[in-house]
Length: 423
Image (tube, rainbow, N blue to C red; front, side):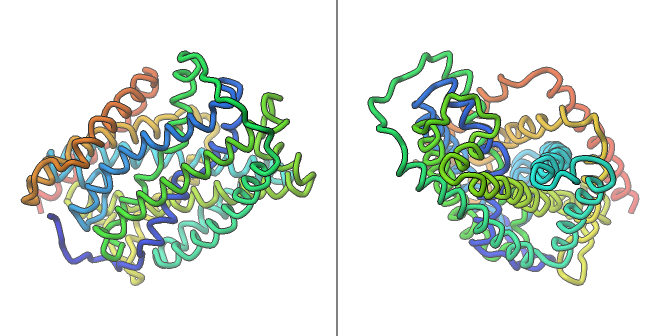
């Protein structure tokens, strides 16, 4: 079991980890998914989401077991590195970091687009640039001055974004038409939408990365991971049920939940959900910034990146890495031709899942435990099958982009190792 005194301040508890889990899962995707799912599989759609959440729980169970074996930051990079060696761990950590960086730039543009629907001046030009710089700059600032402050901000955003969604779920369920018998769709329809449903559940792994800034992470993280996914799965199920049994279902709504809110609450309801979407994406950006910016310090602590990335600020945070991530995210968000690369983040996550699960029995053996326990025997095969299947749904372009990131990272890896050898 890997345990050491962290050089970073441990200011985050179980609730903070839970906020990162929930906001890593709930971004913008669920707001556009209900109509697509309903069009494909009808009233089976909420059950498809429920099945998706249960299957992803197998992956989360494996990660919960992994978090019990170390109190150091890094998440998948730490697990793979400790099990298979420095370079495999570096590749997993670096590709995940690079992909999350691109995703951060893409997500802030999504947020700007939703915000522009409420405030049209943000649609283009200098106002849009100021908005993007303000959002990412603000996230950088609060991360630098302490993860405890990030938790407070995330907590407030979580409450304010979940309340309208819960209200919409309750109202929608109350007004829903009689469900009637469940009609099972054709297998081809389910298979075609299964990946989209699965993608609604990625992002929980972000919470495992800042373990070095978490109080008793071996206890806090397993509980937060399990509780977070369970809560989000139930919310997804309720929202989809309310939508699929409403008069809006099947109308081809581009913004299905906004349309549903408008059906029950008029213009005020639609505006409220529109604002909730903006807040939801902002919370997702906050969780992403907090987790991804902690990957380079973990690599630097192991001598796999220059020590500059691991420098600790007077607030006990890896300030250089946080600012580096924020600046690059701003630059990427101002580049118009990168959005297609955002899909690479999902592939990087899947590879992180596969390699981390494969590391689990090795790490347990290193910790003096039995390589497998009953929980792992049940969960690991399901988790590996699901992750491997999902990788077959990707395309060559995404693999090429990921390989490009790996090559760039490999150069930095050997430069850092050479410098460490010389020193």
